[in-house]
Amino acid sequence: MADEKQAFDVEMSKDEVADVVKDINRFYSEVTIIKVNGECPYGHKEGEKYLTTGMNHAGICGGLWHQIQPSIIALQYEGGPVWAEKPGFFRGLCSEMGRVQVEVQRKKKDDTKTLRTEAKVRDMTGKGYPALDKYKVSLEILGVERHCMWAHREGQTFEIDPFNIGGVCGALYWQAYHFMEVLFGGGSFPWEVEEHIIHGACPDIYNQTIFRLIREER
Image: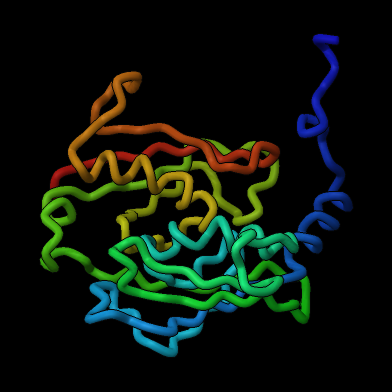
């Protein structure tokens, strides 16, 4: 019937939300940098370790995160890539011609608190990327439906680029990454009213966060 709500439209109680949060936070993935070919422009070094979840990028380079985040999500919910050598494990490469190689291992958390790691923003201008020298892109939170698990709220603004994720939820950044590349490339979507703005939404259809990316010249 038209007035019947889909399962993801039904409001959850606080206890139900708490149970979901506990289930989400059963595992984390330890990302280890095992090889760097040449010099990583972001500064990754062999031997570095990052404790991640699908939302917590832990300060990993955005390009590397974009490559491995979907499989980290899979590990978090006891799945994984079909080509992985063993359960709860995979190897990955960064998007810059595989310059950085990683191993990712799922591990059980000692508690059910949301894992959050403060990430420092690194200045990537003047390093041979003309688009980053010419433009900056900001991500603005326009609205949140129900309970954002990363605690995003309307009005927040973050400067992001293909290297820096900053304080943005890792899942939201992954969703925005494709749009961000359009803007940094000087492009636009024909359905947007303003050519320097792209709208999007996070992948959580229940707790959906709506955002827009804004390109400005430096």
